[in-house]
Image (cartoon, rainbow, N blue to C red; front, top):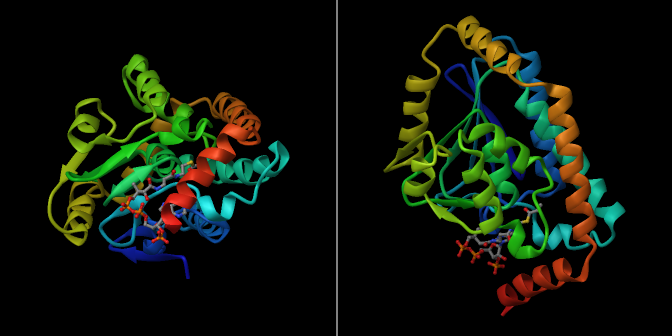
Length: 254
Ligand SMILES: CCC(=O)SCCNC(=O)CCNC(=O)[C@H](O)C(C)(C)COP(=O)(O)OP(=O)(O)OC[C@H]1O[C@@H](n2cnc3c(N)ncnc32)[C@H](O)[C@@H]1OP(=O)(O)O
């Protein structure tokens, strides 16, 4: 199985189990995230959702470049980008807080997933960034929309997107993307997250998440994300993107 869903205390934990590909997202993981969202929406015993990656090297390296490289045209790209963006919207509006335990690199779509979560707790040696620009595409799962919502300073969000590079944890903490940094083992960080972020009664957690959702205009959010999907799909079919991915894949096969 390329993912697992388990419970820790009263939280639901989603772990991407593709360490050999740095926890890249394929269609199977997408279905797992859909199931995770559904369970968070339906199970009233759960107080929070946590997403992490297996191992210590990566939280998530984004879309699986080997799998998604088969998608060539704008329409083919949209057939993956749109459902994934919808899954992330479903996750963004679950009735409980969500936390990304960024145990290692979070790049490309991996950074979009972490940004969609309500909070990010990051290992101090991890890096994260919207590197899509270096592959001649934009964010296509809603990441830019979530970033502008999460960072207090839109100028900083804009710069992070344009620079298209991974940043260290200290920098991401300073700009407010990472809410907390940790050292040591992921398992200890998980326990700390539960103590720190999930200490209130489940009904309190849910009530405050409702107030957070009151701040979002869901229809506006969906419209913005739809435009993001369209931009990314349009760029995806251009030769510049396919050449950049082919370069990454050939580098790795040597
Ligand atoms: C949906 C749109 C998007 O998400 S666009 C962004 C796509 N993602 C990327 O371009 C990131 C590509 N990966 C990386 O930059 C690096 O692997 C990062 C995450 C920094 C980790 O570096 P490092 O620890 O040195 O590992 P590595 O590069 O040697 O990779 C180990 C094996 O994993 C693979 N891998 C990695 N990322 C992906 C990916 N996104 N899709 C498919 N495979 C991936 C590498 O190819 C490598 O495989 P192999 O061991 O050489 O067979």
